[in-house]
Image (cartoon, rainbow, N blue to C red; front, side, top):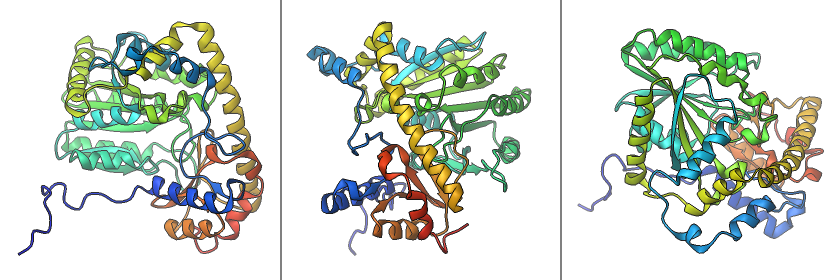
Length: 417
């Protein structure tokens, strides 16, 4: 009898084409055939200019190209360069670290590495963590990879308003059978909806978890995935919610997945950090220790060049100001594109998830894969999600946005939710 698989049982059947990069590949084929001005490629979450070309921050590119060879190519420490970790921590908090908290951090390959470590190190085998119904697909894929389970919580009610009601009900239920609960929040500029949690949203969920934590046998882990923060609004206003993390009991841990991919437009250099907030120093020390160990056991070292890059930027206020100003121009370009699409979607009756800012606008839809194929026939390329199609408005040149909502609406019949 022929052997049907050589994989271990837990890996058998794993693997499928990645929806994002598969759709992006089809978009590239169409661009080569018809010209990029005639193709709307709204697949990958990258910023493109108004010619449809990949955008970089020129100040970032200049610094990187001028780094000495040893800083580009030598090993970084397993936990990351100390100067990088200090710089990443400064970028995360920007003067808003909650009172009476300790923090520690390790370098990771983008925010993805941090999410991986949290699911692996802070969810018990066979137990379940919570992710929003609208979410970045790799949350699930990472969980499957490390043999952990997830459960979806409702983000928006029937009227399209953000809600924490379902999340709290599910958390209570899980805490009846588990001694720990982990929840992921992707905000501001949530992928894929574009929603940003308010200070009141954060206060509500932290008040709830502090109440849960009164049972000292329970462990509460909150993950803040902040990947898109630098394209979501005023840096200070977006961080005032962190006051909700003050006065946490020792059995609440907040983990923060920080990414350089979007903030510095260096997606392919795979650099970020996983940081924590806790009221207990020994928890912060443990956090650094276990996640450094996982670095070594998973990918070993991170990219030294990218780490040095951030350290150089943060230690030079004038340089950082220059890059921040350059990024602000791109943010304003992104806001202009989104405003046109959202306005026209409303005018033609195209239903979208509540959008406030960010790279993506998402439309709930039935048979999303079929709808994506129909749009591709009109040279509009999007990412089909389980119950929606996602537009990376960040990648669509501004001249292509007017009229785009109507073009989508014209092929939407039969796909309404």
